Length: 208
Image (cartoon, rainbow, N blue to C red):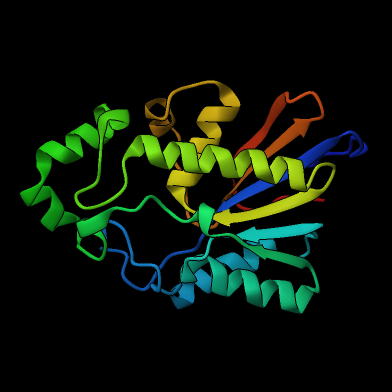
């Protein structure tokens, strides 16, 4: 469903989070940085962002976020910031490997990721704690740099989970109850005093 917010947008920042669209190789557990959107992924993102304006667009450096963000910002003449801090967790040797292979060979580590994520460190990659701290720092910087604006953040499922956990005061593990669908929005309102309102999740479209 779409979300209709009619309260005058003064004294707060509206932040719309969207996960990138579907990628060319959906079988990957975690795609590499240069993995592009599929045709379907481009179409999903185009439909989701159609007829909506933001003051600022922010994107992960990953191609599956950045390429659409650059194209959309250019066509809509909206301001764009590309920020490497919004990239997905660094999954090390799991990057570019299909999900079934990881399940067959690394089941105990996958269980840790799902059931005790804060203790998880990706093989040859980033720790969950380090990832959470990176995203939290980027989240604070976004709020400081773009206070009072309407912001679109194009990023990844893991990053959105960290923001949800931070905004709602819950653990990362608890956010696994939320589906983070491709090309769907989560809308948050951040007030000047630091308070956060959760306005919608899993939205295929949003209104102004």
